[in-house]
Image 1 (cartoon, rainbow, N blue to C red):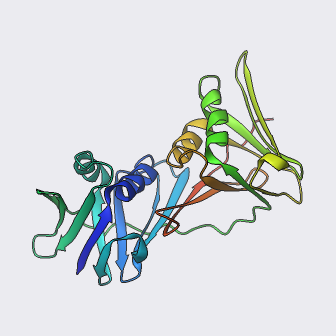
Image 2 (image 1 turned 180 degrees about the horizontal axis):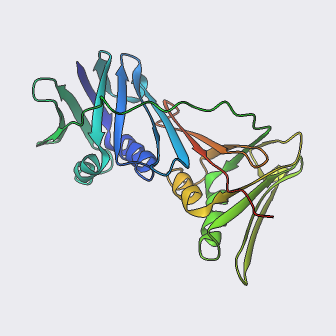
Length: 245
């Protein structure tokens, strides 16, 4: 059994977070809420997302799995206005997800989850923790997109820095500790990442919302943020690009 009502904006946010990496997902449903974990086809990035039952206006569920095509779900959610409430119900007989927005009803055929494995979260030792306003970081990443396909992130005890270098141009964004929400870097940490992936991960976090970054040396980066009034959380992992000597 699965019946729920949720604000359209929260469901749209979930799609925005996951769809840059994968089109098809297995959603784990429990009485406590919903969660999913997926890796992109290139095995460069992972998303780990959870939405607690308290994020919903109404929520009743047993333990089950829902395999869904995010493109189909996104096409339905385009019909919903900001502030609309979306009703969802699992039809076990027809293996469809019934979605109601106002007077509109759409039934989406579900995907077989049998072959959809659950990726494991690697155990990482990432010594630096930085919490920054999303808009600050996005500005630097956007500026880098036009000059390079990779970007270096560095954390020291005094500042967090972003640097990108192209054939002729460079971008440098340096945020001293007093402009950050939090900075804890017991040692200097630096890693190189894909601008395209990093950009898609930051875009769902709006304006001055806090985004927490865990950074190491030539290690994956971990990005973490809350949404739905802190009743939901998204975590990204992105593999580093190793610099050639």
